[in-house]
Image (cartoon, rainbow, N blue to C red):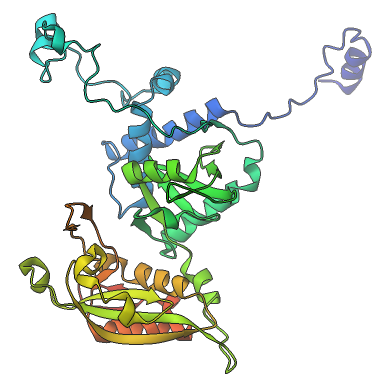
Length: 385
């Protein structure tokens, strides 16, 4: 177009039709984040021809599987994503075609014609007690930009093997700065309020940031209950742990001991396992701690033999213990133990590895070299990454 003609057109544009300003991009909404999270699942299905499975050895697939399971339980989200569901991932299973099919599938007799079978008559429902006076809520996180890079880094650490996925085993693992996987979504505990003790239980208000751009002000015990049901813990960055274990001097004070125990259990399932050791920490005398071992599930309800003790100076012994558990995570004993009341417990501090390997790992930690190595469970040896 001729430049003179263009200037004439602009000069005669009395209504300002040609005065177009570039549109500014709006912040990503919660609906868009929901859509993008679903697109990731759908892309996986299109690429592999199957749904993601909760395979804990593949972090990304594990999270997608849990996320899909969570979406299928939420009717509001299913409704919002219906138009985007090209592969039918959110569709319910085959619907019954007749009333007869419904009645035939009534395994619990919820539709029975007897008055006592009525679904509107509650049975065996205990009266609610000690309900919180405040219910946690989820809402969009207005300052999510401050946390987004933390999730990116955590994913990178998991891919590089600097962090690991582990079972959630107790409420003491919940602290500010820790990461968890809840129903397939990564959660970061950004802040923890003042701890309060009630009925011998510790509780605190948390600010939890979710990777999908939302946040919630959960109670510590509420988060713990949900993690027990459908959650995992993400271990700390091994390199960051190492920074807290260096620079010892002659003036440093002992802060505790790392101990190695061997089980004296007569249970055939336990006694038959070779190279089974417990790695633990104690701030006091180890002998006092293990005196009642035969009555405690954490010691496999049996007496134990104290094999090794390593003194810890000028470092956080719990961090050292955590690093050892991360290093030997693939060799963790997976067994259920029942106490004298019949309560089930799954101890997580017993590992199947030769004693010489455990000693070598502890020495690598003290020199700071362990971040360059990993434990090969099949070969039962420490290998360079």
